[in-house]
Length: 394
Image (cartoon, rainbow, N blue to C red; front, side, top):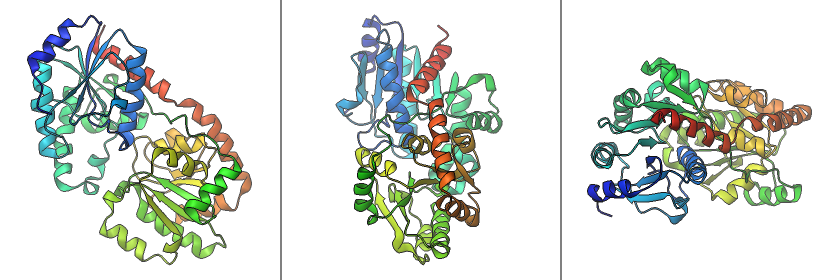
């Protein structure tokens, strides 16, 4: 779709009778391809737009949106060219296409759930910066993307009228790394889809038969990005199977876009690689089942801004093993068994401990029931709306 007329947008805005005109970066709202930030966008914007019919929202896409991403009548979807899926195109889309629209439209606020902002213009800007993994582990990111992130994100943080983030850990990290005043940063958290629920035993059995040859399984869910620490998880599972008389498998759910030569080597060197199941990306309905039927979630990244799978597992009454670093202890509290993500031995020991201690399994499930009540998408949407109101100072 060609770049829309800015004069048309300006006329549209001024004809509206709603109180606020809010322009939103919704380029990550792609049906069946939502990742962590995409789900954050979907869940918060769905609630905010429906809960505030008095305001008008312009959703900016870089491709034709699916109708399911237009949540209410107070949303006007617009497509701006080009598709922003490369560092050079990021700059063109945000600085020229979005920046040009904002300069002419006279909106009250630009909200960006993935943190990207146009650097110029007088429109107030609210950036949601989820974490700074690329600043601390730059080699985990492709060279050109790394250069873009580490050049532009300090600038995005500086020009933002206000910043939202998902954990106290990320707030402190943004404050320290970029020198941003803590009073400018709000923590809004994350939530879990309400479709994650405990499964009956007969359903668990069907899911395990489908994915794990009737065996129980440890589960990882997420991208296979280097910081997710799949290499050490594979090595730890291999050691676990070597020392324990167990038929438990390891199920890895996620797109293999980040599959590296290092990861391939770690996998091919496993003695028990036949006990590892890679499902690829699963439809959301299948993911609910796979999570609910897991013996335990084994989610041990070495850097994380929040860790939504922790909440999803807790909602399914599935015990959690996670890392003792970054935001993860803040999110999981006493409802997880912790490992040092940089130690294969430490990860392996948590697998052994959980499998052999039924009382521990029950304690973690009960603690998860309590912990999950601290987070929800309703809470996150309310906190993000509070942040919007602070930003526009109405």
